[in-house]
Amino acid sequence: MTQSLIQGTVIVVGGPAGTGKTTTATALSEQFSCPFIEGDVLHPKENVEKMSKGIPLTDEDRWEWLKTLSHEVSTTSLSDANQSKIAIVSCSMLKKVYRTYIKAHANNSNHIKFRFVFLYTTYEELIRRVESRKGHFMKSDMVKSQYDIMEVPNGKELLANGGDCLAIDATGKTPNQINREVIELLS
Image (cartoon, rainbow, N blue to C red):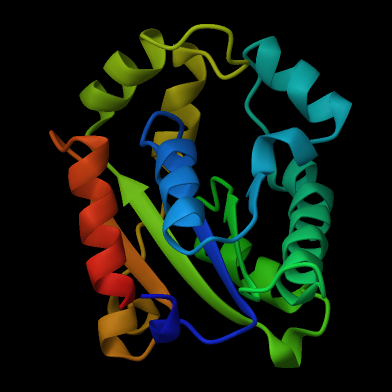
């Protein structure tokens, strides 16, 4: 399966809170025997505090985080210690401009190929999923802000049309169903 992805590939699994980014990214990391970076741990302390208080992040809050994330994952994908030369990262990447920014700020960007896996579902399902999580800083009152700014990849941005994105509707699907669909579409 790994042969279908070239060396130097970074797979960014994104979407609003509650879509299953971490679960999907973890499964992909296992499937491709490659490193996984949880994008939430790269948020600066100020962003985590803001979200913990129910205050939505602005674009300005996100730029430095996205830059750090891009550097970290691109360096990891090409690391000598990473035999697969593939890396997986979870990151909300809610807007097209965020996806473009991640690519633009990658280390050795001419040697990195990005694949963006965007998970989305209905607002009601997001609320249900987030309310069932324990111990996460993203609470259900923050879901609306992410849902409202979400730009599901479409048109030329999609892999099927020559782009680098997959848009996966996760509504009513189990993590295994989502993982199978993502792996099938990536290959």
